[in-house]
Image 1: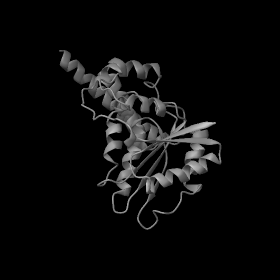
Image 2: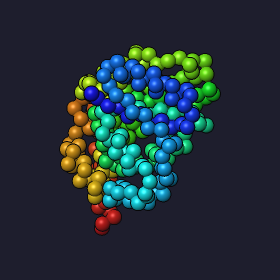
Image 3: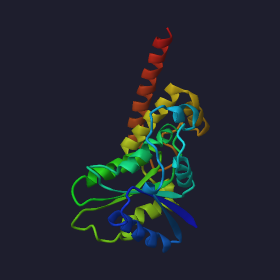
Image 4: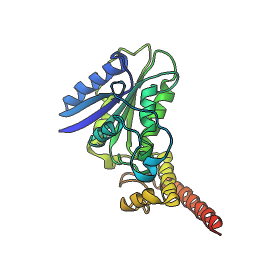
Length: 248
């Protein structure tokens, strides 16, 4: 049985929480288990920006973040769910995202689908879902759709059609077609790993990503591959030149 972990960024078990329960029932019909992690029930300290996690792979803060990250890592797929708080995700969810900085430098969710969920009784829905999708991309995961609700349809339950892409990519990640922005993002991360060296460079070499166009074999548009490849090449060439100038 596959297992999905949902990160919920709200204390209130109302709109966003109810959508997750809808999704849980739909997933159960496909023999898929859903675990909901309510972030507000955990001690998640603010990131202090020390970059220790990037440089050493370990965080200096002692709280529940590491255990949550471990549970998410073991999942076959992920759901990111939050109500809109002033045009964005909730503060607790943002705090958790800040603590996953090392996952941007050394992505761990490649070939895993992520479904984004958000609700609002006002504005900010599109911006919030876009932000969640950007986090998905930075983690190296698969953007497997989004579900949003506004005041006029906030009580509407989730339909099977709304999670069909998520279910499809959960079983066939090789059929994913990354966007141009995702391919460019990959090249940016690759260039940073090469330029910064250390654990990042070692990790990217170990994963054999330095010579690839994307994290894993999937359906990449040839034109997008060329464009992103040229951007990456230009970026690494510029960084290499700056490194030489700094050493001379």
